[in-house]
Image (cartoon, rainbow, N blue to C red; front, side):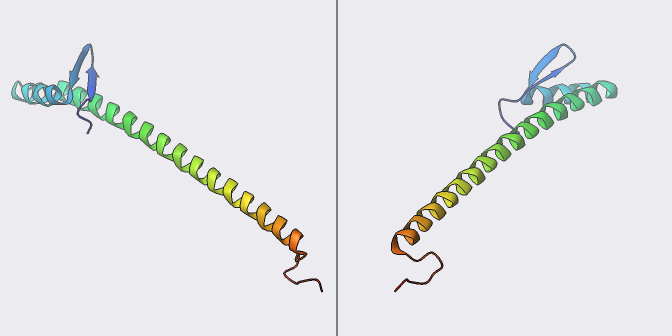
Length: 95
């Protein structure tokens, strides 16, 4: 979990460390419903951060695939140009 994680539960915003303390305090005072709300808030933030990271990772992977496809297309064009210049379009030399 990122160290800069901030969670908002109700009107309270807390860091990961203070949320851990808050859950411990709520547990000690027997306020189980508040614990569930706090944990739900933490899970929501973590889930959103995870989804954002997944989207960013997929965008980078897609950009890398597109760049590779572009490079392959350019290499094919260069190979076709070399073949045309050598007169070897079908893999056979013209005598």
